[in-house]
Amino acid sequence: MIGPYANEDDGTELVRVRRTCYIPPPYVSAFLASNMSPRLAWTTVVQTIRANNQEDDCKALIDFIRVAITRSGEQCPSQLSTVAPVALVMDLDLHQFRRSTLEKDFPNLNQENVVQAQQADVAQQLTTVFRSF
Image (cartoon, rainbow, N blue to C red; front, side, top):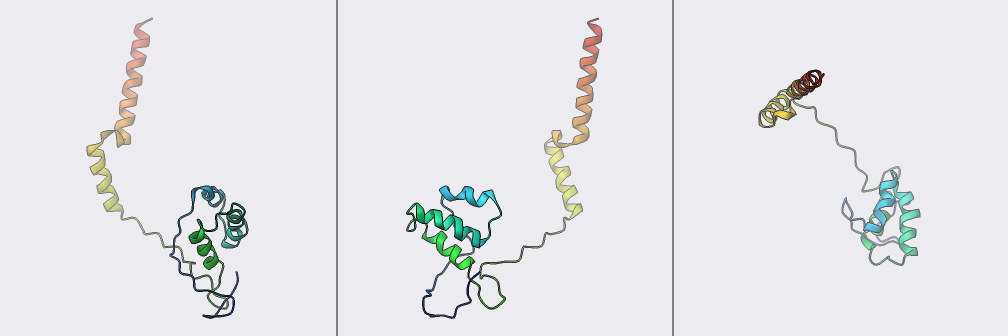
């Protein structure tokens, strides 16, 4: 991480980014290959972009990574860092109601019906096999 910087410090510029960024297709695999930190993205992806002479085409991604590696204050994370959302607790009554509705509309989703149907098929096949002897 670098920074923090004050507005209009020498050698700085104002960069505006969104919380998400489009990643051009040639660079998607680099991000999917590992849980990439902003620093690693800067040292690998941005250098690859520069080597491929695509800085103009990938300006939004480069600016996004620049903001991601810049601290907003002493002992502060980047402006882009966020706290992961808390998972909601499932409403069991609602889940059971929705599941029963689905099973009425799609009987094959009901595991008991599927098992009974499979057992009936096995019994029918065995009956056919025994009759052939």
